[in-house]
Length: 263
Image (cartoon, rainbow, N blue to C red; front, side, top):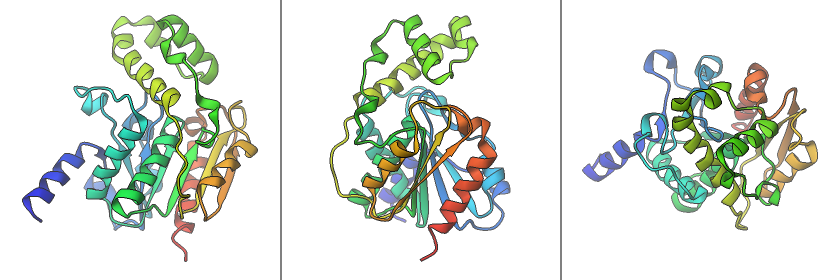
């Protein structure tokens, strides 16, 4: 490995959290890069390695401005984040691999897949997305991220039911998490899909039965983004069914990921 390659790999490591050696055991058949939702981080996928290994090894994408990367500026451009993530992943991943993103993470995973293909000649075996309609649908545009703090939190809580009371009650927690939430909401609302060649990997799209933003019809429109077919599944729960239906979701994810390896 050359000095330049080594430096690139070292810089890329800050983007990814991987299972520790003691959890891995035998080599996995596929690695699954998990992209968090707005305001989320590696904790959103805590415990996934225990349930997915040994066949599927989950990696968590670490975004700038939070957790171990808290000292870095919060990003303002979703596509730019995806391109940077793709550069980092290209230095670390070897095929086969898959991408999974929830809510905001669905668009980040999608754009990362496109950047990996277009710039690095790498394409996932599977793109899995959840709790987000297809990117060509203008349903996510808006200006919620510009609302005053209390109104902003109230709108998010009503729409997604995902604002812990401590963020409203504790000034320190609010100061820590509100800028991340607001920046991530801005990423979502300012993202504009640009037409491009469809992916050649299958897409699996998941939604919550009680999530008003998801339906079989809306999830099926992800099919326009691939030439390899799109499956859709609705699971019990609202926008954050990945928490309440984690075991069921992971069973389906594992099945879809392993099926993608069959020629």
